[in-house]
Picture 1: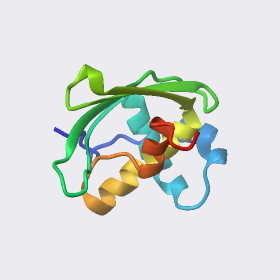
Picture 2: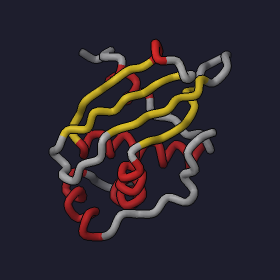
Picture 3: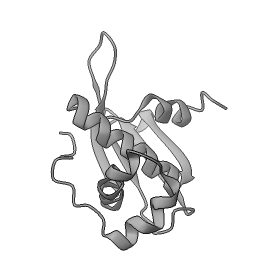
Picture 4: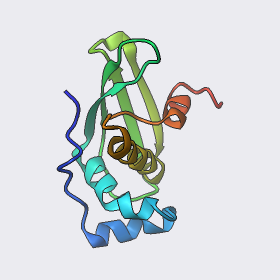
Length: 126
């Protein structure tokens, strides 16, 4: 069961204002909803697999308030503890990935992180 992104409560203007300098263009329009998603502290979705069955995941993270604070995000795939991954990054960077989740959902009706997120998670760019 994927997280329902249709009914996200947007963050208030004060909170959005703190994050606004980190984003440009169209991302700014999605920012209030992305912060609202961040505040929930978790996300359920499905990783699209080409020519295969989608793999369900649960992502969870500790919520803090400042853009430069670090967020540790944990992803567990298919309800299997052996398929768990963790990544730590600045809040503003993580919220940028949540913006991508929301944009992707609007476009494809699928709750999933972007390819750049998975590349970072699996340290493919290191």
